[in-house]
Length: 339
Picture 1 (cartoon, rainbow, N blue to C red):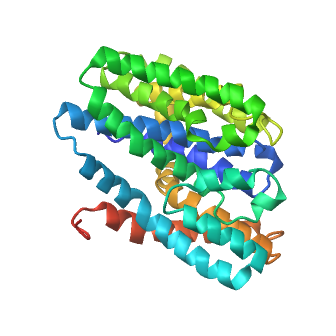
Picture 2 (cartoon, rainbow, N blue to C red):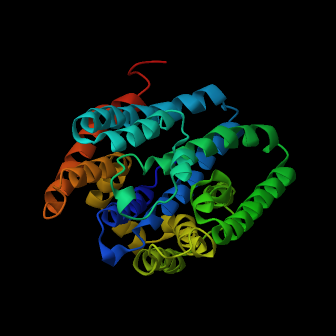
């Protein structure tokens, strides 16, 4: 697929608020919404890759899962191994038991269900859980397990495929709205209440694949800027009391959808989000996301968090850069450790 540097720039805009939210910065009280931005981006990228492979008659489930494994597992395992060593040294027994259970759920991509069983994402107890952020990776992987088969089975029947896609998106939205009011934790952690966010990215991918919309540069700048306003509004106005995902998740999801749809045709927005330092931050976003919570959590257990935020962020950035250069990039290269 054609590389879009502004999408990596958007990744930077997603990961930084998440990190600041987990650091406890009140200014970005809705920074957790960055995960929802990631969901839409992931849906867009994966669907684009799958559709292009199918249309080129180059689709292979095995190759798809190999790409996903190379993309996710090496960095994930490095972080969990180092976190396990740190947990053994740092954590008290009651915390160590909880960590061990979350560790078991991680390679099985069931972390969302484990943390759902523990109840709660917000609050001081969650801040002490080094792997709590892996719930979002589990949801993405659960989507990756199901969605390729859906495309493989139905994409050739276009009308049926589009109907099922839109129906699934609508049902997921309704489930999200209803369950958020009924039982917050279930709505927050379960894949069927989050699927519509990934499917929104899928819809963007399908529309762009068909070249159904062409924006003039000025119009594209306005639309992508509106999308950014919706995303930033969510970061600044949402907080721990916001019933989320529910109806509120529509705001950042639509914002991300508008950005994806229009930013490639924009001039000013694309130029800003293609700025090399921002793109680099986006390229590091996966490793930044993996590392930030364990480092913050262990620092809190050691009473080293307060007053050391800048030092901890530099440590996160250093670990992320090393992981990206020496783990992520090599394993993505098929000539390195052929499977």
